[in-house]
Length: 171
Image: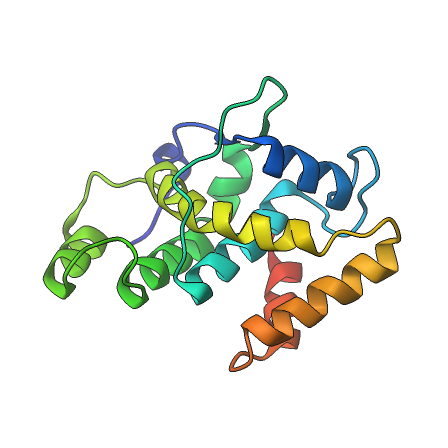
């Protein structure tokens, strides 16, 4: 299923102190961070962690100072979002759907656009951001080592170097 820019209807709001704290400490251009170039890169890794661990957090308490992923980033990466969404729904059991419901949800729902898919992925990313928050140190190099070590444990059956190469491919 191809996704076009017209299918991205809104920015994705990353609510909660967890997102604010992690983005401020890890994303370039924020208060201190210089590990991830954009909020989307951080989101992609956080969602991958949630999918891999089959864990979701529905939402966090809203805060005034919210972060977001712009619709342009979503539009530019629609194919990656499609793939991650399909993987999340089809390979996990935490969305309380049987196999037929999963297949219909992913492939038969023509009204689903990229923004809707990002809302589903956000639940996985909410869990992942709590894991990344545990990795933060005052020293960037130590934080990077902590994230790498955590990912190696969580993704023991995944080639971490390829995962980070994929992150670099993101626009």
